[in-house]
Image 1 (cartoon, rainbow, N blue to C red):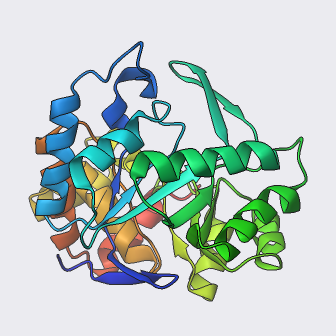
Image 2: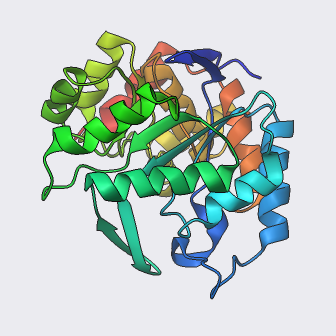
Length: 285
């Protein structure tokens, strides 16, 4: 697809710049039947355009909508020829912008079955525990995914929103092939987790990867790099992520085709080591 290259996630090879399908459901990431997506036809066109541009890794979750993101993906992309769809379970919704956590085994089993049904597949390529539930033993939640993998319903297991200690614990229970944590040039609280993933060749999928682009100051390194490369701050933020670790798989999300095309073009921006260091130094926590 681009200069970004590819990465192997478990037994799946994908391009290193994916698409996060959270925002296609509408404001508040909310769009159940009583509140339809703002623009379902537009969301379907957006997903198809992403694949036309070479994106072959789509990330979603049952809680996006809830359910609506998965349904739109199935409508737009099934039977997923050459496209890897990753989804997640473990969060619940009670309204726009309202999120809860439920990692009980029975809830995760139901969530997985729902995702299989909505996506119209017999096996999920990459199924991720969306967030550990402090009220449930971590090994009990993760054990459900291991059981489902053994039953052929999950191809690869991933984690999301985990600490380094939780990652280490999980590696003793399952073959974890990816971690999805919040991370950007300006938000590196998960640096230790990223370092561990880099050392172990575990894919790291940063969510909210454009935070640095949104917070760019006119005189900072990000803005200066954007001007020198003839790019937007958001594109530089993505290029920086791709440069700092070979296991990085950014999944910028949007509901606008023009923004999608801008994000995908970031994969062709090559930052020099000096560029990477300048931004890393400015944004150092």
